[in-house]
Image: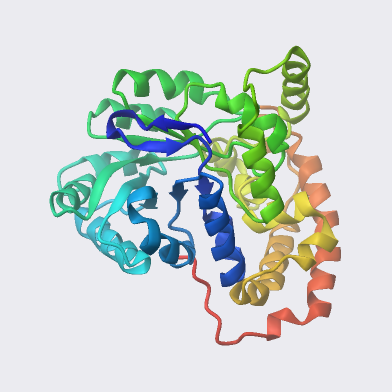
Length: 373
């Protein structure tokens, strides 16, 4: 495993980290085993704060605290609430400190609140003075100019941003300014929510000027494949591999939402959260990537089993509100065939809902509560 210096933090981080978001969907023992195995394979960078991922990481953290870099995050805007979330994470992790604490930006108004007097960054600086966090930064998956503006403030140590074969805007909008300020570069969505094979996506990404990448991990096989992809004898891409990268880029270029909600959201007569439905829904991405049989056989956490049928019924109800006016498609700067994507989702939801209903999961685990917060 290759390790790189995470900008001015001077932390040495594995080039392949672990995005812990998907681990919240797994039964506790399965998720904890994945975390342990990732550490055994050399991964020391764990990007968490999703569901119960902190609790699943805690046992490993107790055994190897000095060898692990823990990252958590919040979307709070004021100092008091940011401090509360730091303390909450410390309690869940059962740890004395967090290595990197990130603020989700959301939009420019939120960024300015976070940076302003009494804002969340003030709270993080207090937490750092008290030894509760070591470094702080920003995270966002939409308009990346927000991250570059935040970096220019001079108080950001690390940024988490999307970068992959298809979404390359970060190479121009984030990387240069981050390099000027010696800011750590952590990459989310390296395989574009599972749309690109790791064997293709990760070798390309490791050749970019980044420090670590955090693909979401759902299975042991996926973890092993990702590690193999970044531990080749030579990371330089061959001409054939470069050609394969380009084929994947062309194939997905007009299928990949860049989550620019400010463009398509206001245009939707049915008030659909288009980007969330076609790109940013973890459970739908699982279904789309796995297929029905594997989706049903997945070791879902009890709370997820109880919620899946309701979740997809709500999605289908929302999709049926679509009037197919085409305004979102006409305004999409990436020329996504949004109307056809909606039609495809309308067709693929009913078989899943029927299968989930037959399993009877929605009536089980009445004491289970969703850990997403």
